[in-house]
Length: 416
Figure 1 (cartoon, helix red, strand yellow):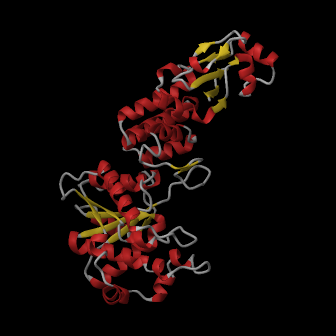
Figure 2 (tube, rainbow, N blue to C red; figure 1 turned 90 degrees about the vertical axis):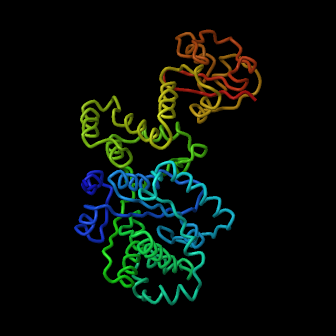
């Protein structure tokens, strides 16, 4: 079995090791490896996809993977990365989120054979755990000093942390012990903000199962070139649910990343081989204006998260901004491509007045100059007559008129 660790390190996907050489040795043979997913929302986002893809890479290398949906730990709330107490979710919301996340994970992981992969819910073993069982069987293995030294707890001591969230660390440790005992799981992976939780799992296993050979490794929190945490756009998280973040929106995010981020993300997010990534990188830096890296990245990630058809459609929609061929878009696509440029307009207006209304021109004189010079197009067609009336009855889908000034300045007129 080829050791997958070299590829993971090439892609900068590993930040922390409990013991690098022990993990490398474990990965020389087939192992069972798990990662947990928090059902705090109805959809995972692109930041979570880093961990999903990590599991998938491990699975493709021949290892058995387990995705744990935190139906029980989600009731408590993970204090990692939080500066204040979480609001507890209702049981109904938690159950709905857990089911939705399970369905998303099923899209990416091979579950055709339980020897290859499983998705489990930790409520199945933590849900029946009594307070006395928790304290006697597990709590006795953790000293208060050990827990207070954890960054995820220490960082909250000034602002305050409830006993509920203080206990989260132990519950996640129980997950690792349970999976070690029931599934022979030897490695846990997680985001670098989970390091304290992962090492507590190792601590518990080594005290209960004295001869266990187990390890943990984390993936770095992915950041942009400006150092900001990855996964946030101006409108919020990039969700894996296409109803929350459309394939086009996902494509637009990645087609607009910096040159350096494009190559970095090709390694992190895509399943392209090293040789192919290096080939793209050479072309990318040799001709930066062509945006070779961004195009390869955006197409690959939309293909992997959604489908090849969705990726091709996103490319087509993006090209509309350069070609102006708006008549090839349906209503939903039109709204996605030009929604940010929408301006509501009442009644029918002469073109010269409309250009002033939407601030495409500052005066009638300027509006006429734009029209006469061929700088104005309406729904993809040149408009040279400033006196032509732009009416709702002639609009696309009875609602929209797309006006372009020059090559790049768009305005979406919404007739009301």
